[in-house]
Every structure is written in C-alpha cells, then in structure tokens.
Image: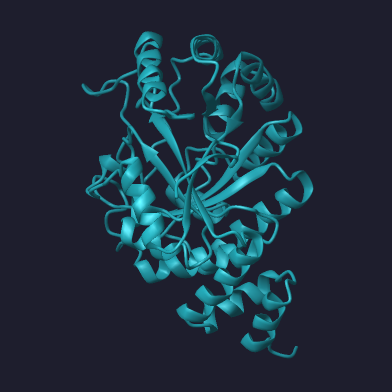
Length: 361
C-alpha cells in the first residue's frame, strides 16, 4: 500500500474533504504543531467566518459525591461511609439554582456520583422542582454512567429512564463519563462505569427522544493516539446518524489525590495537537470547545487559534477538578470577555444550545 503523505492530507483538509482514521493518524504523527493548528484554524474559519467566540454562564452542581464506580482518575468521589460524603437535599439545590438565575446564568449543569441509595424518583422530583421554580433555566444534567446505572437499578430500559427524566424537565445531556471511548482504556481507568456501547446508547437514545447532548473526551492518562482517533471516529459516526451533538469538548486529566498520580500531566503541546486534530476530523460538529479550566486561560485562548470557537463557561461553582492538586481559576464574565477580545475574536454569551444570548463589543 502506498504511504499517505502529509501534503496529500493537507490538500484534503483545504478542499473540505473528510479524513479517514488512517489519514488522521498520519497527520498527527507527521505534521508539526503549527501545521495542525493552521489546518484546524482553517476549518474553524470555514464554519464560523464571523469570528465570534462564545461562552456560557452556568453552574456545575454536584448533587452527591457518593459513588461506587471508583474511577482511578477521580479525586472527587467518596464512599458512603466517608465522613465527608454528602447528598444535597432539594431545597439546597434550589437555592443554588436561584443564585445562578440572580447571576444571569442560563444553564444548570448537574452531575453526581453513581449513588446506589438514590432511586429514579429522586432525580424526577429534583428536576421537576427546578423546572417549576425556574422555568427559564436550561436543565443540562446527568452523564451516561448515571443514566445507565439508573436503568439497572430500576430494571428498566435506558430509553425509559431518559423518557421519564425528559418528562420531569431534563432538556439535554452532558457528555461526561466518556473519558476515552475505547474499551481497552476504560477497562484500565474506569472499569466500574458503563461500557463504550452503553455510553453510545444513552446519547443515541437521547437524540432519538429529541434531546441534544455534548460529546466530551478526557485524555492525557493511559491512552494512545490510536485510542483518541477511535474515540473521534465513534462520535463522528454517531453525529452522522443522529445530528444530536451540539459540541465536542476535549480536556485533560489532572492528577492529585487520584490513583493515576504516577501519570505525568499532559503538556500544552499535546493538548493543542489533540484539539486541532479533533477540529479537523470532526467535520460534522459545528462547535469545539477550548478548555481554560484544565489548561489555564492563556492556553485556552491559544486554543481559539487551534480550531476552537468556544471558551467554555463562567462557572459559579466547580468541584471535580478542584478536588485534585490543580488550581482552578474561574473567570468572571468581564474576564472571559476580555480574554476572547485579547485573542482577537468577538465575544458572545450563548445558551446550552449554542444560541447567542448577547454580544459584547
């Protein structure tokens, strides 16, 4: 078989043609960082010629930290017997949502652990109460592992769990729990979580039920570039068939108080190469997010020139990454706006569905 040249692949990207997994691997291995960035930036400009970069104002409420999955990369989870284990009551959650509304937020991102003491009815009552009190808030909650566990706990299908949650008020599903969508990797870093096929079933089913979802990838631990491309290929295939993903959000593992603390942190170069490759390969995704939370704001801003058109969120609350040794710095709205301007783009606040709420000039 004739070897694929980087020049040939570059020509395909410039022409707007889809890359194969083999071409993606060749591009990653043999193109330098600036070439990857240039090609990813070209794709971003083609999809977003107006030069707008978006962000969302949200709150990440972790309703419980009790979890039986035992993921090796997680510093947040606790066993039920741990003294600092908790489950928030609905009144506390409603107060957190009220603060989000008062702050001008539009999106409630809510995820917890896989807590065996919480039945589906707990989630239905929680969502219903939020919808009743704050109908203006977009409820973007519960990762695939939580939904899969509920289906097993209640002995009902994933579809029925999602249908009941949707009827209670769930509007969209975050891509959490994906890690790297290679079973080989998941067996090493998160063997207690749902399988790759189950993660896919949750998202396909949500799309069939009329809900949007996001696709995420947490990398920089025990994966290879082949595993990353396997992940990208899977989510691209799902998007081809359902069109239900609003965005792709890659971010890196951060060590500190985890079982993977022997892993050296992913470099910014690795992050930017993977971000660029994601933007190039995922030709059917409109939006790709740069991670200021795990990469710091300066690198997040650079990511806007390596394919990303979104800079994530201004969060009232973040607990998971903060549980590691990584020092999370959450920007204020004015900081986010200035960072986007400094990077050379026009800032805009968006909602969960990537609709513009307001521009900042």
